Image 1: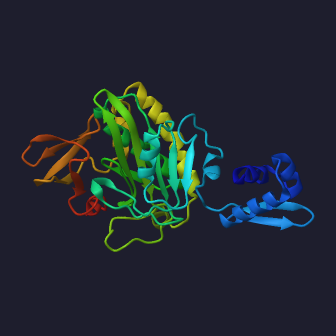
Image 2: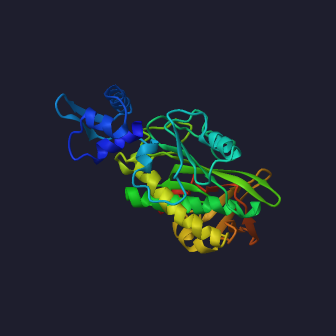
Image 3: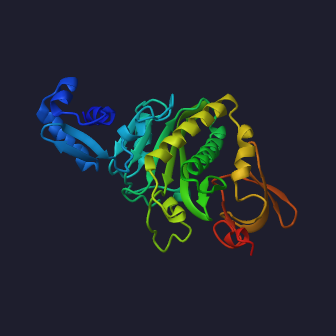
Length: 333
C-alpha cells in the first residue's frame, strides 16, 4: 500500500485527494490517511489541504525499496529488493534467502547494520541514515575457483559509479577497497556456497560510507564521500548507478569468466600498482613492487630480491609503505 500511494503522489501534477486515491486503489479513505502518515514517518514532507488533498513537497534521502526501484533500469539486479530499517547483517540475511531459493539479483538493503562484516573478520561500522549497506545474491554458472574475480569486477563497477554520481576521484586499493583522497570509503565482502561441480550462490556484501560525518579514532584510514566531497550525496542515486553498471559488467563477465576483459579499466583505477607495497602475510612480512593484475585478478609483485610472486586476494593484506595507500608517496614526498 505504501508503494502504491507513493507512486500516485509522485505521478500527480498537483494535489491528489484521498478520495481519488481510495478509488484507484480500492481501499478506504482511512487507509489512505494511515498510509500518508507512514510516509511522513519515513521522512517524506507531504502537504495536505482539506479541499485539495495531498502532494509531496520533499523526498527524504532514503534507500527504501520504492525509492531504489524508481528509474532502476536493470533486467536482473535489484528487481527484487528486501529492505530493513535495522538488521544485524545484510550478508547473513542474503545467505538465508539464497538458501531458501530466492531469485538471482535479489538485493538486501538496510538503513543500519548492527553487526556489519568486513574482510579478514573485521567489523564494519554501519550507522543509520548515513551509508549504503547492502548484499546482492548472485548465482553465476562458473567454477568456485573463478568466483574471486567477481569481487574485483564489482569493485570496478562501484568505483566508476561513485565517480559518475559524485564527481570525486575514486580509486581502487587492490583487491576491492574504494578510496578517495587516500581514505577508504567503501569495502566489499564476498561469501560463497559451492560444491565441486559448481556454485550454489555468491553473496556480494557492500558497505559505502556516503554521508557519515565522523569515525572512531581507531579507524584512521576510514572516511566518507561527505567528508571528502564536503557535501551530502543522495544515497539511492549511487546505489542505482552501481546496480546498472555492475549488471552490464556482470553479463560481460559471464561470457568470459576471467578478469581479462576488465584488466585495462581496473589497472587505470588501481592505486596499488607501480609502487612499493608492504605484503602482510600470516607468517611473514616483506616489501615488494606491485607490477600488474593477472587474468585471475591476482596481484603480481616483484620482491626487493628480484623474485616475482603472485599474491592471492584474501591470503594477505597489502599496505603502502607509509600508510594505508602510501599517502606520502601520493603527495610526492
